[in-house]
Length: 106
Image (cartoon, rainbow, N blue to C red; front, side, top):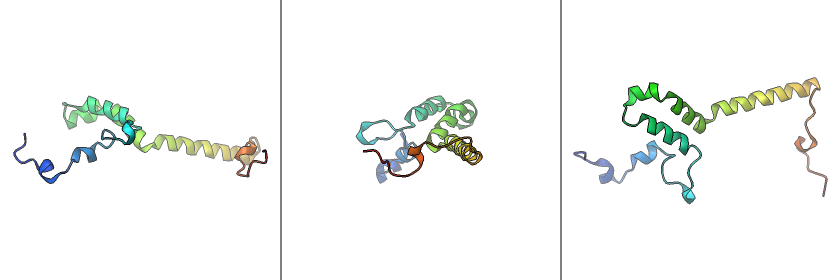
């Protein structure tokens, strides 16, 4: 027990801000990245920050990707660039439902 417990005296819950995925969620449903965060925390628990940076690198990268989705958005951007290139060349015609016009069928 700490000598001065500021969190309880001030009514703050810093753990909630540090680990937002693990906190209470609306409708009691787990957040999108909860499983990745849990794996990372289980790996890093008790080994210290320095060792955890090296030993738990894969778990942290998975968790980071789940939160920020950088690789996913990069991949989507590349797919759109390829689609636009094929449309310019005339080798691909988007379906009518992707034209942005209202559907004429009843």
